[in-house]
Amino acid sequence: MFAVPGWENDDAATEMTTCPLSEVTSVKHSGRSMSASGRIIRQGIKFESFEAFCKFVDGSSKPKVSWKDKKKHQNDDHGCRDNSDYPSIKKQKFNVEKLNDVLNEDKAEATSVNSLSTLNKLSKSEAKLRTSRFRYLNQQLYTQTGEASFKMFKKDPAAFKAYHEGFMEQALKWPDGDPLHKIIMDIKKQCKTSRLESIHIADFGCGEARLARSLPSMKVTSLDLVAMSPNVTACDMANSPLNAGSMDIVVFCLSLMGTNLKDYLYEANRVLKIGGIMKIAEVKSRFANIGVDAFIATVPKYGFKIVCNSGMDEDKSYFLFFDFKKIDTLRTKKLPVVILKPCIYKKR
Image 1 (cartoon, helix red, strand yellow):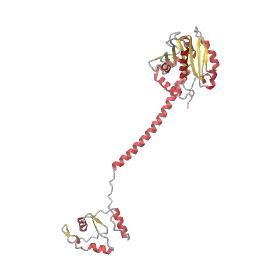
Image 2 (tube, one colour):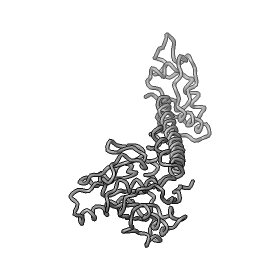
Image 3 (cartoon, one colour):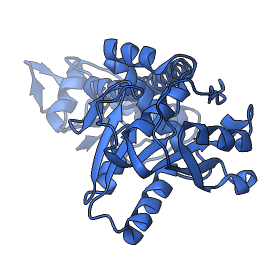
Image 4 (cartoon, one colour):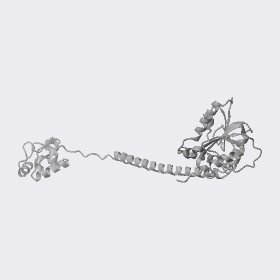
């Protein structure tokens, strides 16, 4: 590196740089003497080589001066002299590709956040739609006959699936757990004390046929408005394909739905053997219109006798459980009407 030395004063610098030096005048560049150019050399300018210095003096090129060098010279002009060498700073190349990558990452992140927000909104909207459809279907089941419900779901099986999914979501919110579990435990207990070699059970309104899966050693016939599995028989539960006097136990677990409950009770009497048991589990609020005692007093007119009920503890439970034994076979359909309050889920 060739640098012009610092001068004691500016006049000396001017004099020295415009006057030929003995060493410099001996060097020729482009056919002319360097001393002939007479250009003023400012203190502190650096040259990569002596040849570069010669080119500058000759006027053919100018050295690149960094901004720090320029600032240094400005300070020198104001009396702030510093003879230390400052390395020239190379200007960094602007990386456009890196900037694009950063912008694309930000855009992707923003898009991801927006997509998640949109998905959450859609999920909430879909959940509301599912809940609304379940409430509508549930109301239909309670306010029309079983035959009408059977035809409705036969025409649109997807509606039954939507209802069942909504029903299972509601079941998770029940304060007393799953009433079907209690029925299963009761049946297992009764079978231990029974002398029957085999027990045949009819599950009316079976849904996914969980009772049959929970009692694999027993013969269970699963019945519902729509067959959700090959082991389920689709039918109007008031007119099942079961033979008369063929069942030991009939189960109605939250399935006494519709305006023709007396037809279900009549069908239960028809398919049960004498001494057979009809097990009923229902939401306590459904008995608000007639009361538990009135219900217990009405069912015996269908050829049954009450043998067990949880009505005594109705204030402590969300569900009520009843066991009725068949003591007589009905020979007439002129029976008293049984009406339970519809279990309608409120809009929230």
